[in-house]
Image (cartoon, rainbow, N blue to C red):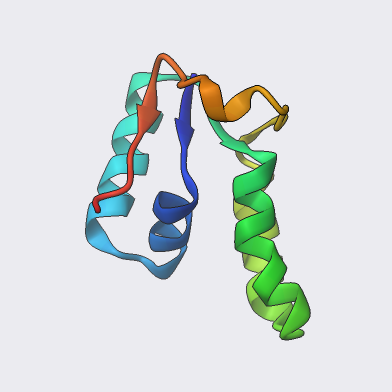
Length: 88
């Protein structure tokens, strides 16, 4: 499994080339791409509060294709074995 972070998810949803390439590469390398529940919150929270229903539906559709990874209090101390970092 390869996990994507918040920045990659947002950039992918915006159609930014480098993140689209990263996600497509990840899809070729593994049968499972994940996103942490914290990253999902960071992506959905502003859309929900701004009542951007169309964008929220797009994000939810994208996320349904991913494996949702639990966020635990130990998470910040761990780094996944495989991950797609943001470009920054």
